[in-house]
Image (tube, rainbow, N blue to C red; front, side, top):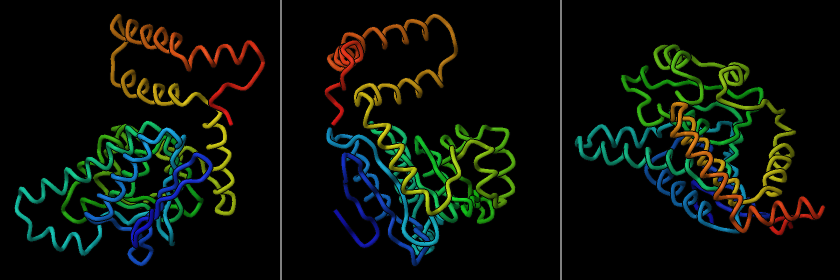
Length: 261
């Protein structure tokens, strides 16, 4: 599937979603937001897709909100603004809860909502020339709908600085903060993405989706009897599942499980 602003393709069980607005640094508007949300939902529900790559064409990963879109919003009513904000919030949630691992390839600047996209990815790789900025307060705004994901990624202590100063920070700082997992040379990015997706497709697809869900639940829960019961139930259920039985049998029989290949 393709459009002027968004390219969507699949290859070898991997979905690839590419922002394609290089002339405006892949800034997003309502059309791009809706298109990306639909693409991620489709890939999340596609049993043939095992992982998703999010990347961008051009010199920037994403400059955040498109200026033309912002100009239109200036004349919106409060209800119209709420509708648009909820659409962006839905995109972030759709990426975050995608049943397939999402790998973000960040080359060049990621500003405002672009940082939110990075924070929603399960694995984020960045080139050494990548740069980041939570620039909203400079415009008299706040990084509201992306805040749950960015704060979770970098912590509230770091967010106090970067949300309030609107400073630009480089890829090394993004790695130190935990916003990105790995710095990769530009000419090595595609190979590293392939290496990661090759690892993912060797794993049980239902187990991968369950592991993502486990992280969200356990990460937001205090330790105690409820978490003990929840985690015990999750492992008991997956051991009894067809995929769990197949994985154990394949290991004991020294063969590849059925989901590989």
